[in-house]
Image (cartoon, rainbow, N blue to C red; front, side, top):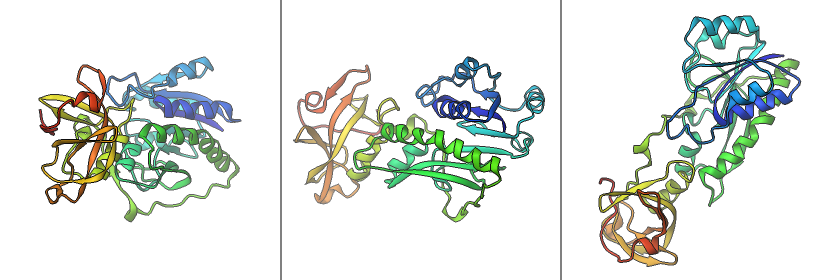
Length: 315
């Protein structure tokens, strides 16, 4: 089949590589210009560089809303469009242009976690598995009929970085298997169960701020969900932003005001956590490693040389 690829960053790069390695012909690639957004500077393998290396024409677009793009797409005469990590909505005159429509690759197990940063949100919420979905694009956002899905389990110590590497490795086989089914006429499309759907917004700095009224178990996942190179979970100490790089749920039970820097436990420092912490029956969060506003990393036991004071959600 003749394929046009819409994609960006490492997800798009993996998709394009899979297409180039397949028996299908990539006739055009459309990708975004580089961005300074914090979540778009990471995992930034260049789709345009890979396409140009293989002699595939490239168009750079922030949004797919100009007449020239539509004209070039019609001239390319694709049998199908494949999209992965295209950051803006594709209009019907584009996604419905090829005979086989547009196959979108989304990094969640749809219908759950449609939208943005699904791996981070899924880990924060304690999901037991994550994955990748190949579905037919329609007028909604990640709402089209599903062709294939692949999943991996979430382990008790997994970070968002771990899950990224595991799920991105699913993309190549998912893309080639999907196109082979479509080309052979064996594709079976399953409508999404909208009663199970969830949608998450693009993350911003505010979404990484720690709320010490959350239970320690939730905060420990919150820290793992924002591992390097993602923007880290952060709090404030003496008016300065402090990133929490590593943490664990305490073995002991602690009472008091959430955010209180309390006592050493093991290789870390206990911070009182949970809205019901005053009862003294809740575990705290053992903070192990931190990074200061100037980028210096410390063991928490070295940074908090004296106990007392508070970590806060405001400067």
